[in-house]
Image 1 (cartoon, rainbow, N blue to C red):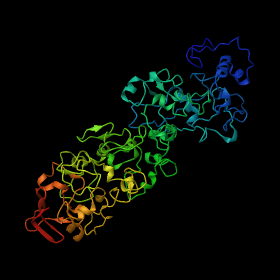
Image 2 (tube, rainbow, N blue to C red):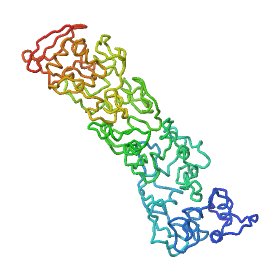
Image 3 (cartoon, rainbow, N blue to C red):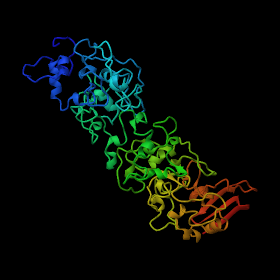
Image 4 (cartoon, one colour):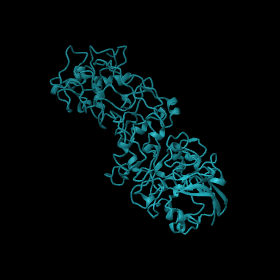
Amino acid sequence: MGTSPKEPYGAKGTRHLTMPSVRLPLPRWCMTLGAVAVCSFALAQPASVVDSPHNLSAGGPGPVRASMEDQVCIFCHAPHNATPVQPLWNRVMPTEAYTIYTSRALEAQPDQPTGMSKLCLSCHDGTIALGMVASLSTPIVMSGSVSTIPEGSGHIGTDLSDDHPISFRYDATLANRNPRVKDPALLPQGVRLDSNGELQCTSCHDAHNNSLGKFLVVRNDASQLCTSCHQMGTTTVSAHDQCSACHQPHSAPSGPYLLRARNTTQTCLKCHDGTHAGAANIGADLLGVSVHDTDSPVDPPGDASEHTSCTDCHEPHTMGTGHGTAPLAHPNMGRVAGMDVSGVAVAAARNEYEACFRCHADGSTLQPTVSRVIAQNNVRLQFSSGAVSFHPVTTSGRSTDVPSLRPGWTPASLTYCSDCHASDSGPANGGVGPGGVHGSTRSPLLAANYNTSDSSMESEFAYALCYKCHDRSSILADQSFPEHSKHIVDEQTSCSACHDSHGIASSQGNPRNNSHLINFDRTIVRPDPATGRLEYVDLGMTSGECTLSCHGEVHSRTSYNR
């Protein structure tokens, strides 16, 4: 055996000779194998395979075991009549074509299983009987009518798309392509690649040593095994420190991304469903009539704005705690991707609006909920510093004369998108529910009520969203516009009939006709029947004129002065 040209069982260079210094009585399973060195190797381990579920002999400790066979190693190895596969392999090799893991996040290119992974799968794919060994003419009979590995006992199957990828080359080139993967030179001693530099099942599992549970090669109670290869960033959210809270390496319900539920949303809701102390109850918000999450499959094809999930706004591995100040991104967003004010993609949004622009700007398929004279669904253009008129999301507003602002707000103030679009039970509406843009009972995902229909009776509730920042008493006292009260109280005309709350892009409007967010709702305000004109003209700081028809009344260059 020691002179065999085949690579011996064990690490390369291991000598498989009898060792005269060993004077221990040998158990029958070692004597049957006929390799004293193998037994010496087993005895040197912190925990023997004999005490593990891989002991399939009749005396094994696990629920899956043979009826009569008392040899331990025979289920995988044999000193004679073994297959040509090393190390002294005693099982038929699987011939099944496996469904391979793939996702757009994977920079490596796995192929069909190779090397030690294929050996592991000869049991764990469930296609070959556990007792089918090469050294015996008849299969070993297993107890309890068990033939192949049962479900729940390490059964992986032939579909590997929901398992951690294996049999791919893990090298410095891969690490350079994917900054979330460590250079293999930094792997701890226990985590090993095969001789071809490929990651295999044996990189994470040692079939002979179950001292750490699940045959792991290093501890993983604080994600040490996962972070041996993966570098995902740091988080101050303690519940996000443990990879296994969200991921499982085998038979993951989500398939790609190895999530513990069928998709991202359902994985997050395992904690954020109101049953875990300290975790925001996002599940309640997602029951609203207007929600930000589509409960979509993991990494679906198509436009991003059509398939939103928690990770579009939160990068869970880098999330922090605390509060933000507009326009800076909230710490709980983490290093989430976005788009800047110039339309350039950014890997980590510095400002909250950049995360919003990723879906609601260039290329967005979402349409405005109000039919405007100037139609625009690219909010980046509406909030641009070059826009004609805009709410101060990306920069301070143009006007220094805004008498209706409530205390705490000034013309220099900036606002978050999530000050208006957020849960109506959260802080944005004075509530105690979770903050953020998860869901609301008011469409389109509004933090407070905002009537946009005609014939709306004015009240503090009717325009609660506007009155968050604009003082109701000032508006009704006509301090900003001399006919505010007449329009919204007497005529019951919605604020939305005249004002476009986001803004007017510079390529579509101009300061003369679209200052003060003027962009009429075409379903309420119609052209002057005599001239066909539908326009507002800014005549200075406190004056202007309108030409239009509204509520059956024609305004033909009707002017006003404050």
